[in-house]
Amino acid sequence: MFTIEQIKEAHAKVQSGADFPNYIQDLIILGVKGYDTFVNNGNVEYYGVNNYKVSADEKYPEIQVAPVANKERFIEFLVMHQDGQTDYLTFCQHAAQSGIAKWRVDIIEMTCTYYDKADNEILIEKIPD
Image 1 (spheres, rainbow, N blue to C red):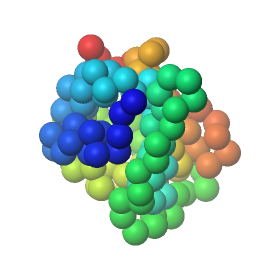
Image 2 (image 1 turned 45 degrees about the horizontal axis):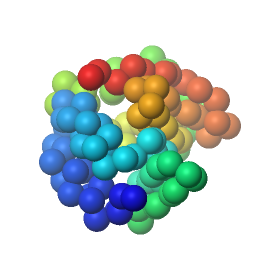
Image 3 (image 1 turned 30 degrees about the vertical axis):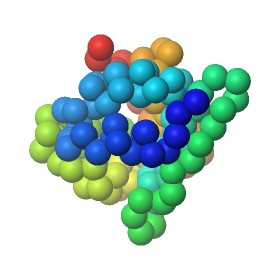
């Protein structure tokens, strides 16, 4: 099974959203099946086979998530991030401003789903191979 240390090594290679597809490939090699990232504090829960789960500690001071999602504005921020124009913390701040409370990466389905505070799906994105 994978460890938080192995995941941190893979994540250390990520400088912007442009690096995300390679990061996913590294996680696949480790055996990660998916993970949830919580925007308010950066906590991440990683999932593997047989209900295996590990959690990373909070990564930054708490960010207030807007109570209502603004999908159009979030997509603008997401495109900027994927183009390498913002770093991870800035993207998280933009997500919170847009009402995104968490995102779930499903490595089996190769999707990333963004949710609001009420756990409604706001955007489902296909992860490039």
